[in-house]
Amino acid sequence: MIQLDVSIMGQPYKLACKEGEEGALQEAVAYLDGKMCAIRDAGKLKGNDRIAVMAALGVAAELLATKSPDGPLSEMSMSEVKQKITSMHETLDAALAPQENLF
Image 1 (tube, helix red, strand yellow):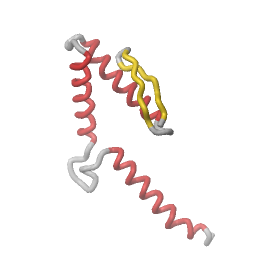
Image 2 (cartoon, rainbow, N blue to C red; image 1 turned 120 degrees about the vertical axis):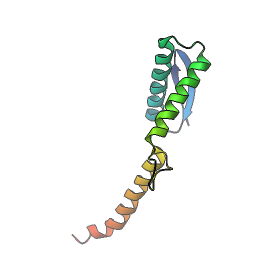
Image 3 (tube, rainbow, N blue to C red; image 1 turned 90 degrees about the vertical axis):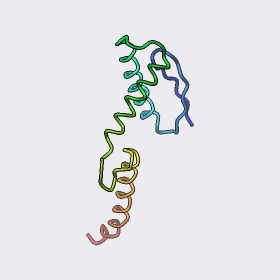
């Protein structure tokens, strides 16, 4: 595990993630920080806890909007869809590897 020092709304946090996932974590922190700062700067809410809850609700709504309402992937998150695609690529690569020897 790797520890990163980050800042969300000016508040420092020490977060842990797996090696190689630092970029994704930094991107998530920047996204959340942007959402929370926008809510704070709008001036309608006071208190970091309320701002965090409203930002979390906004992010959850965005996530749910990315899910397909029907179809074979409808109950899967984007991360699960990406995993499924990676698995399909690996299966195809394994199946096609013997074919490369023919040419």
